[in-house]
Each structure stands twice: as structure tokens, then as C-alpha cells.
Length: 172
Image (cartoon, rainbow, N blue to C red; front, side, top):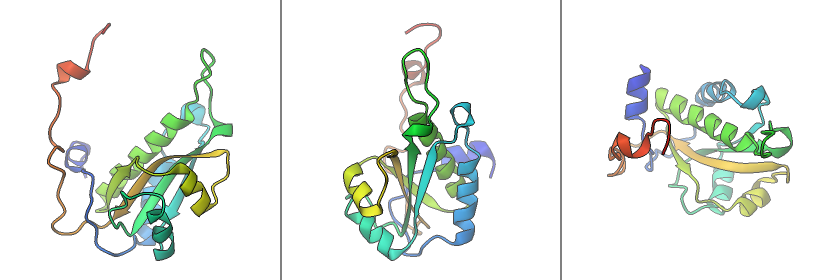
């Protein structure tokens, strides 16, 4: 798909067919995630693929915003493998994970898979349900699946603030 079309048509899907993603779709999505840039190419991302009934039942214990999606990917980062900015010690890993999540969402849409970024999840419960080690930080939950025929963007999907309210040149 042409990039301009891809970024304008992609939306947060909240209505899914009850069918797990194929291995071929998962592989394509994960390849796009693997190509995402990270700070100094440290690649601290860790992606938990949830593509079984058992996994999605566990997921439902961690968030009410699962939208009955049959699949999901939890994008995490290893806090011990992050590049650190020398001026203030800020880690690049949270940003790296978000870039990876964006690659996942865009490739998913490109191949006909819907996704919705969910920030509303309980990280402690996620750790418990999926045995996530302490050094791995859950950052972004992407619930995923094939959109239903009547799936449509949220009413505010195409509402944008004027560019001059969000873009500044040389100073705020």
C-alpha cells in the first residue's frame, strides 16, 4: 500500500472477527517490528505474541479494553539494554518500544489486520499472568485481529487540531 494512503486510512479497530491471526500475518508484522529503529540499535524491545484462546482469556484479566480481540501483541522493553542519554540519564527504550509498536500497527493495517493501541492495562497483572521478568517493562498493548465488515473509525478519528497549534519553529 502507498504510504500516504496507509497512514491516512489506518484507524483503531475495536470490532474483530473471532479468528486468530495466521502465522503468515504474524511473521510479516514481526518482521516490520524487527526493522524498527532503536537508540544506537540496541534493540531492547521484547514482543509478547498472544494468539490463543488461553492467552486472550489471560489478557482479559489485565484490561477491560480488550474489545474481544482474538489476538494481541504486548510491546515491552528490557530496561537493562537501553541506550542512556548522557545528559540526564533518560532511557531510549520506552521510545524504542513505541516506534516498534507503530511499525506493528502500520504493517498490520497494510496486510488487512486491525489493531488498537491500549494504554489502559494493569502492568502488575500483566506480569503475573504472563510471567514477565522484572527487567522487562510492558509499554504498549496492541489488541489485534481481522476487522468485522461493520468496523469503522471512532467519531474523532479524523478530527485534528490545526497544525499551527502543534508545530512551532525555533521557539514555543
